Structure formats: C-alpha cells, structure tokens
Length: 288
Image (cartoon, rainbow, N blue to C red; front, side):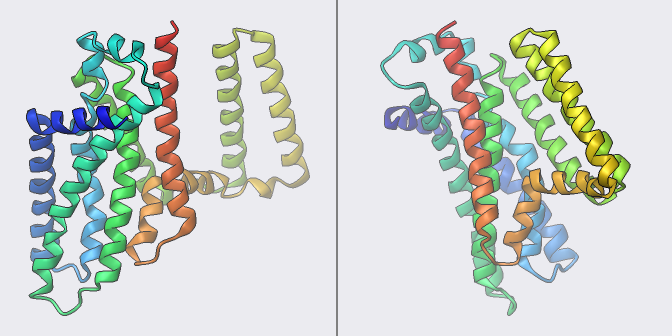
C-alpha cells in the first residue's frame, strides 16, 4: 500500500492534475471569500467555510478522474491486479494519495483564517478548526465517490463528468430537503419506491423474476398493513431519510464548533462504503 501511495502522490505533482486541482480550488474559494466574506461582510468565518463545499463539486472530480480510469485506459490495471498486492491496498493507497493532496490544499487555504485574524476580533479558532475538520471529512467522502466512479470507466473525462453529476445530485437533494413533502402519503410512496428498487436489485443480481416479484409483494404488504394501522408513522419519513443520508447536513454540525460523534462516524462510514465498492469492482475484474 505504501508503494502505491508514494507512486500516486508523486504522480499528482509530476502531472498537471495536482497543480490544476490546488490552483482551481484556491482560486474559486478565494473568489467566494472576497465576494461573500469581505464584500458582503459575513459575520463568522465558519459561515464562509460552509460555502467552500460548493468548490468540492467543481474540483474533486478533477482530482479523482485519473485514479483508476487511467490505469484501465493504459491497460496497466492488469499489472496491478496480477501483482501480489491486495486490491484493497491498491485502492486505499490511491485514495490516501488523493486525500493527502486535498489535505495540503486545505492547509494552504486555512492561511486565510490566520490573515483575517489580524483584522478581526470575532475569530473563534476552535470553531474554525472543527469546521476545517468537517471540510476534510466531507472532502474525503467525495474523493471516495470519485475513486469509485473512476473504477467504472477508462475515460478520465467521463469519470469527471459522472463524479460531478453525483456530487451535484447530493447538493440538490440537500438544498431541496426543506421543500420535500412531509405528508404520510409521500412517506408511503417513498417506501414503495424503495421496495421496488430492492426488487429490481434482486432481479439484476439473481436473474430470478419470481423472487423479485415475491419480495416486492411482501414488502408492499408490510407497508400497506403499517399504513392501515397508523399511517401517521410515514409522516416526515422522506425528509428524515434524506437528512440521514445527506453528507452536507452532517457538515452543518461542524460549523457550530462541536464535533458530533454520530456525524464523525457517519462520514467515515460513508467513505469506507465507497472504498469497499471500489475494491469489490476491481475484485470482479480480477477474477473475470
């Protein structure tokens, strides 16, 4: 794993990818800093950091687009998959290299806070440090998504576009959360959609239509019985689920300067899930 990590980390700085990512991230976040913090006078520096998440959506696809897609395009992935290294070591090494570049960029970005502290009396450094920790954890989650997407295609451009689309979807869902319906009927419809998705997944993996239909019918029956007994149990269900899955909602807790154990574990778990999915994807290719 260490060998892969060192190779990838050097690769980021020997190619334009690392410089482009760091330059674009710092440039866009500087623009937000000037127009929102200095020009419009945001009260708290941590409030400005909440807008930096938007920069992730633009820059992280650039950072991760070559992670595995380039190996696949150059056919060097076969060399990686046939060497004695574990697939998990390869994936984790590549992920950590991207996360290191991201961390270095955040450290440079944090110099803004040091500079602002000379001209402001309301700098709460404990909140700022915790906010940067939240930014790093959210960024790692997005990097894990990008690495996974990179394992699905041999085109760096396609990888970047798909990663951008996924991150954009996460942002849109987070922004629309307050306007989502909270009626019991919306909760029932949502659970039926989830039941249908489970049935489709079973059919796609097992190629057994009967099992898929029986699963959907069984889940639909359970949903219906619960609705008859007390339909109000479905009230606000859609909002609760979206809030639970929202990575950005977890970051909002860090803005207050408090490290929430549940959010910390959630973001680490979110990252781990996509690393696992990447390992699974490569393992399938190794034994195909």
